[in-house]
Image 1 (tube, rainbow, N blue to C red):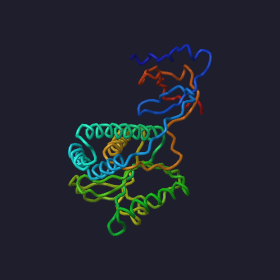
Image 2: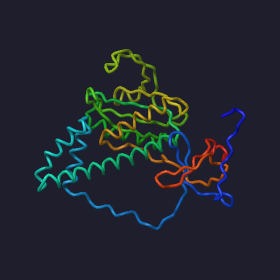
Image 3: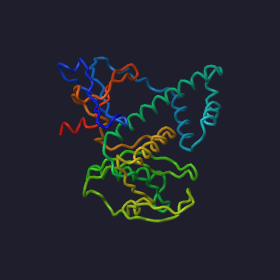
Image 4: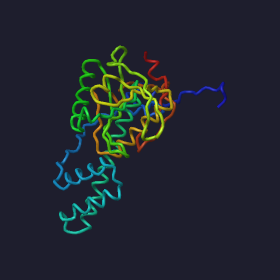
Length: 290
């Protein structure tokens, strides 16, 4: 496109007479508006899980937590569930249905996480690994989450992340995105040089002495939305959401979008996504409302 050419807002007849009320979110590249369509339809009632489904979920979560490959996981689950089925056809159909359900749930979790991540402002990508001298896995999970909850309440921190295990050592640690308001950092963040057994070379980390004293090794790495590192960080977190059975840890008050009115001047393009009409918006759609 010639530098002197300008993008002209799309002429959409629907917008000629009135604005459209939309749910606006960020997909990582653009703001996208989905028209709000009120419905009286009630969501389908959730059926309680059967004992077999509960056992499947438990076995799958255990395998995921310890990094077992998919083929090994399904083989092990199949062997343990076989006594509960009359024939192999019924067992195979059950496993296929449960895997589809898991894939759907993971997709929903990833979408929710990425929309929250891209729509909001974050300051740090944080990694915390507990010390054996300070915690067990159980106390680390419990006290670390309590600590984050207190920081959210008392200092208005926002956070979202996941516990996961290192592939090489199987050691539990936490990865997350943190928003810390001005003047609300607790402890002091100091640059630290040490040897990484993973990369087998010296590395630079930024350790918070408050978290180091209470939990163990940590790294508060600054991130900025304009940097390539931001997208890489989110991709890294999304990978672990799909690989493990861990729940995502969220603080309260993290929106995944906003309900607002848009008009034709806000729209860059119209798209069809899964049979739903959506609108790609110009990046300054919120700037114009300030």
